[in-house]
Amino acid sequence: MYTITTEQSFDSAHFLAGYVGKCRNLHGHRWRVAVEVASEQLEREGQLRGMIIDFKQLKEDLSRIVDFYDHALILEQGSLKESTVAALEEEGFRLIPVPFRPTAENFSRYFYEEMKKLSYPVIRVTVYETPNNCATYSETPAADFTTVTMAGNSAADCE
Ligand SMILES: [Zn+2]
Image 1: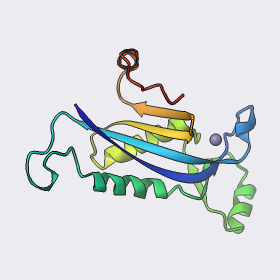
Image 2 (image 1 turned 120 degrees about the vertical axis):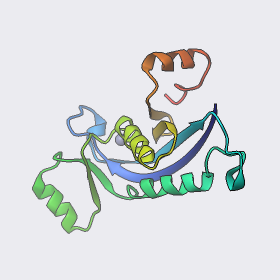
Image 3 (image 1 turned 180 degrees about the horizontal axis):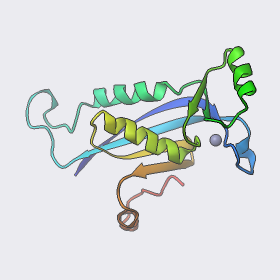
């Protein structure tokens, strides 16, 4: 199987409502999003001969999806009082409400699904919240994932 990976990043603030610990406070990250697509075969003809897909297109599509979240406050819907949201908006801050707790895990699934919607043969999306902490979403059953990891794959390296 062939795989290619592309990565984009965005800088944004978030907080984890209901979390006991420092992540409940407003703070920022450089979120890095790595998307891996796979194929058993390569294109045989034309411009994409010898490739899975057009890397440039993949990069552009991921960049467009990810850039939307750049320089914003990402917040779970309903996690701030309406008056607080109104006050922040009045100040001109860019808020992006999301229907999930804005964790690296949830973002990895979100970006996975966004790339799938564009028909990419995506197999894995990893979101780094810090250089040392990341979360990965894939549709590989957990048992298989463990086997792969034990076989020496570096799937869990980013912890
Ligand atoms: Zn955080």
